[in-house]
Length: 315
Ligand code: FAD
Image (cartoon, rainbow, N blue to C red; front, side, top):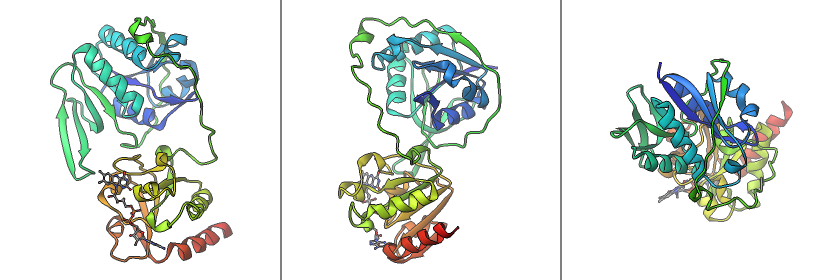
């Protein structure tokens, strides 16, 4: 079977959910090899094996961790030239897209970004215009280099015991133009990361103020979920931008999405419509969010949420 490369995205030695999704997708395309660019491959090996990586290419060392992504693109391009994989998958994250773009240029190759599915013929599916249009496209020059949108599929394990091959890291002077001078890891709160959470409680303009967002946080904490916000809530200064859900924010696909005081504009739906179960609380019975919701409460969130919280506390 053809070899498919999955470029691992990890944070503090832990593989991100999107990596497990890519491994799951890659298994439908061929033999899965994970590529670790920087950090420690040993710390990730068990998880990568659990989700079907039969091989790990480990490119490690200060040269990759100490500079921005140009060097990672150089190493990946050299690996692709050496092993001629059937496809290369990267996360549709800031870093994944930058590496993919640089590699495509280096190899004079085509590129598909933000796919939610990829078939064995290399045809990728992209959801565009806030989820209203589905595009099927294929790389017509070179191999499929593809970035995969997080939360596009459910990761499933398929245990394998990966072999590890060290990859030579030979950066050019150009790769060393931008050096990392400081790395600050944001203090991780008790809440799960928004894009990876299985429960998300989001607040919109209807929440009314930054102070009132405590109500959203309280419900999220009771449910063990992450907090999200609509753009109107973010633009009004109620909650920070990194928690925005939607077309110009994060895409989430949790088991449970709770929308509080959110009307359900198409741009908001674009970031949450694949959630498994959607509960909406809105005082306007005509709000479009109810077209999407599995369960809806027409009511004032300032009455409904405290009552729900009280019930949850009792259990
Ligand atoms: P509103 O539409 O004002 O809705 C507030 C809702 O709260 C209303 O339905 C109201 O009935 C309800 N409400 C008020 N008070 C209460 C109460 N006490 N109890 C219960 N319900 C109450 N939006 C995003 O969210 N994410 C994006 O990424 C995004 N990207 C965009 C990109 C572009 C290019 C554009 C043009 C727009 C984008 N938007 C995005 C904005 C989007 O069009 C909407 O304006 C926004 O989603 C509205 O947010 P909202 O639902 O919180 O506010």
